[in-house]
Image (cartoon, rainbow, N blue to C red; front, side, top):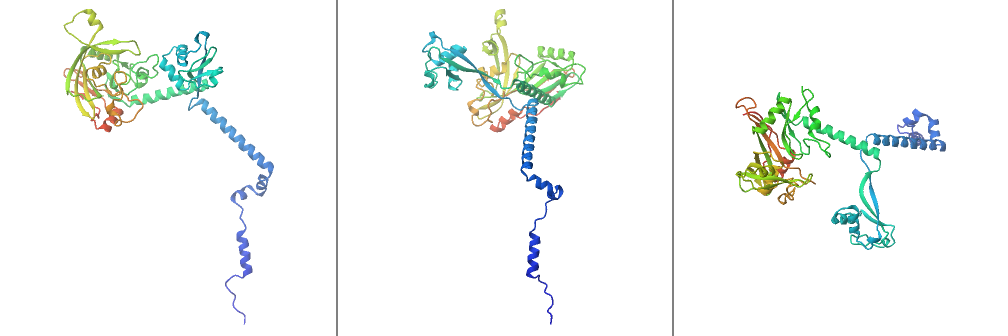
Length: 430
């Protein structure tokens, strides 16, 4: 009797099935390109052409990147610029720091610093090959000393393009900042909250200044904006721009007549113990620009000599302490006169508490903030024109009160030490 067929495959059929399963199927790439292309690619000639093609693609990519870097450079490489000086017969056995100082006409301490920083080398000298270059090292007649006197770009064209585009980018960014900092506007004036680091007017070494942006700040005006008062480059706060010539004259007259009151906020250190007071001094300039400083002297109202009045200017400031924390005070300052650097000098020389970030009349960063304030290479000036009052601006008794919010560096410092320095914008009639 025949047995029923088994449902399990025979050994021979299993082996055949396994062989079919292990046979690799052609990939989609092989199916698309065809067998002949695959065989040609594996030939030595095809591999050589493929390598050359890849090399050419890299060259084209590199040239495109170089062209892009020329048109839109992202950095500028510099190289040192050096000068060589020969030691004369009358300079035999001279000290290296003395020779560098005399050759460059610089102070001896700067010459020593250049030597220590590796900016000085003694070349074409037999004895210099075996001696370490030190400030007190001695030179021989006919030695040559090579000194780094500056740096210059490796590629002048790339450097010119880079700095031009950088200036354009900074100007565009500053214009957007100014447009977003408008705190008040009517038919006569436009008021901005001036950011730190922006000079009011241009100078020989000043590229970015407020005057440069007046035309673009308001293009829909009938007349160009006019600057009617100034703030120091590092001082922030309310800055009034006149929209018409008549308004410029009006605001200027108000300043001269004392009908515009200004209120500043300043962060100073150490703390000011007396909570309020009035400072009355004389002020005189000492030195020449850019190192000129204002110095306080005694003021006597009864002294009517014209020579004294011409040389010494009266400076009056009222102050109130708004808050104090950890060796730092927030002051409200109201100047009755408008002398150059008046508030900074009065804080530093009379209250003995320089403005934080003032490197001219103080240390910049006081010891009280060491380890507490936000870390920075250079602190911005913590002096802010918080608000102005324009007397009778809206008619008799209608005073315009315009305030500007405190800048970011005020807020950061306040948060780090618990000082209440935040202030929002307000404007309107009083």
